[in-house]
Length: 383
Ligand code: GLA
Image (cartoon, rainbow, N blue to C red; front, side):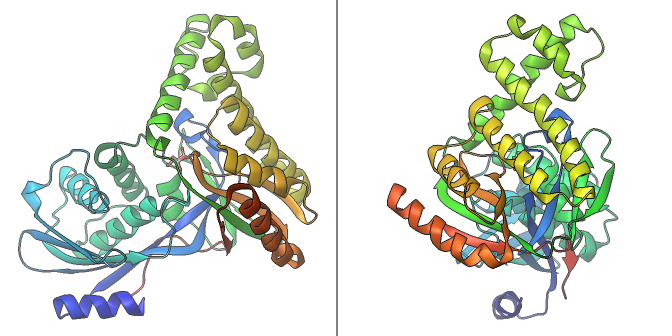
C-alpha cells in the first residue's frame, strides 16, 4: 500500500484513490462454473492494487510497478482484440466499461500487488477487479460488484483469449473474511458459509509450473463439454442446457453414444457437482476430514478424467495425501500448473512445508513456493 502510493505520487505528483481486490482459492467445484454448476471459492490475503486519479485528458497512463513498465493509450484507440502483456487487463476493463456506456475519462494509474502470477490464484481476476472497482468509485459509474465481475470475465475472453467462467472474478469481488461462497453459476445466487476450523490452515503449494498450453486446453475442455451437452440433448430434447442438467444415470445410459474423451469430461463435471453439494453438507456438520476426502476425489477426477493436471501437481497431491495432519489436498484452478490447495493441521504446517519442499526438490529439482493463506474480504477502497 505504502509503496504504491509513494510510486504514484512520485510519477504523477498527486494523491491517488486506491482500490484493492484479492486472489482466490477454491475449495471444491473445479471446472464447473462454465458448466452452470456450483463452485466454493474464497478470497485470500493476497491482493492486487490499483492507484488512480483522473488526469483531465482522454489518455490512460498505466504503470506496472512489478515490471517497471509504462503504457499509454487514448481511450478511443483501445481495440477489442487479444493483447499481449499485463496491460491487456486494464485496457479490457476500460473498453468494456465504455461499451456499457460508462463515462470513463483519462486516468493516471499505478498497479501492483502480491498475488503470485501464473500460480492459479487468479492474479488477473484480482487485477481487473481492483481496477474496475477503482474506476467505478472514481467516476461514480454505478456498476455493481457483479457487473464488475462480468466486465472482468469479458476482458479475459476478448483481451486475453481465455474463455474463463465467472468464479474468479466473482470471488475476488464478493469475498467475505472467514467465509467460503457457495455460488450457483446458473442463477448467480450465492450463500456465505462460515469456514471456521481454527485448528487448520489453508496451505498452497506452488508447483512453479506455468504451462503454455493452459489457455488453449481450457478452451478445448469447454468445447468438449458443449459436445457432451449436444449429445445428451438428442436423447433428452429440450432438457439439457448444460452439464448441470445431466443426471449421472442418464450419462451412463448414453456412455456409448459419445467418444471416450467427451464421456470422461462429462463424467468428471457431473460427479464434481455432486461432490460439491455433498461437501457443503459435510462442512455444515464440521466434518473437515470427510470434506478433505472429497477434495482428493476431485483431484483424481481432474487428473484422470478431465486431464488438466500435470506430473508435478499429481506428485504434490499424492505426497500430501498420505502426510499426517493433511486432511485435504488437490490441484486447484484451471490446471496444467499452478498450486495445490491443502488443508493442514496448524501444528503440522511447518513440518509439512519442509517435507513437501524436500520431496519436490528431489523429484523435480525445483523449489516450490508455499503460502499459508487466510480467508479475507473481497474488493475494497483502501484510500
Ligand atoms: C480458471 C477460470 C475459472 C474456472 C477455473 C476452473 O480459474 O478462470 O473460471 O473455470 O479455472 O475451475
